[in-house]
Image 1: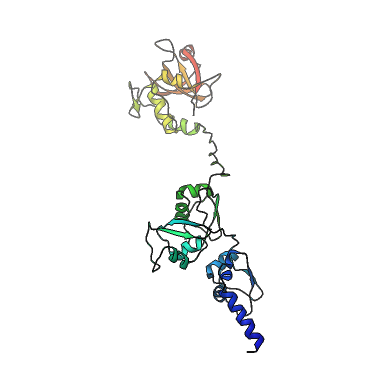
Image 2: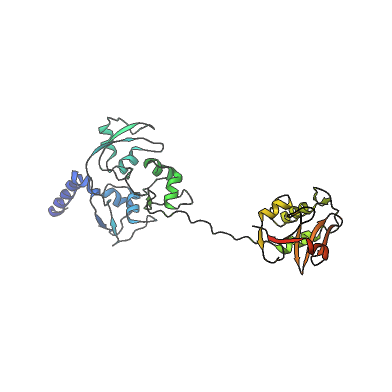
Length: 319
């Protein structure tokens, strides 16, 4: 090795060992990959981890090529401070050191630790600038290697569900470099489900009604063994997915008046007292199907002189 190379090597060695170099990751540095180099070799040279380099450069594999420019530090301007950190499940000294832009040795020195062992709930003094965005005032957080949704939520005094809601997440999967919102600022309220307009299936209604032609009239009857007029309506409308009240009078009060009946509307008649006391289902062509006290379930012409004289009006069911 000639004298020039010896001087160059010594200078490089002194730079690598200097306090300035140990804090180099606090300033933005870039490096051009040389032929034959690997991520591991570069990580050792700059005293960072392979995962850090991959994260900073958004690499999905360990493959690199000569001439490629890599960021080999975090773009973070540190401010020296001493704070405390409470150890949580899954923490390690290396993870805490990286999240606070410090080293394992510095944490061990400040806390007079003789080993790397720490326990959940232990309070550590941490010197350095925090890069973990743990402040409640922080509005975003960038996912680091080995982060989990639970860890990010806990460190920022949130629940997992809150964090998922703020970011519209449907699973607990995170990716390194992903930016998470830590507040609901700018989060759009959930879009209400579009209102679904219901419609009466008149074909089903009439088909069901006609199945029971001939079923006898039974006072208070509401099944195919026997119907009274309102029991018949309740049963048939229920089969079409519509619920109506039990008596003719309450059905009258719960429905909406129409000027002329349409198929599926209810036609009302006044019988033994003033007001509605009998009802049936309008079928079209002036016909209605009902449970008559003397006929049982039958189809009747509304122009029949008996029924025409007693006709009170038509109403539609409110869906």
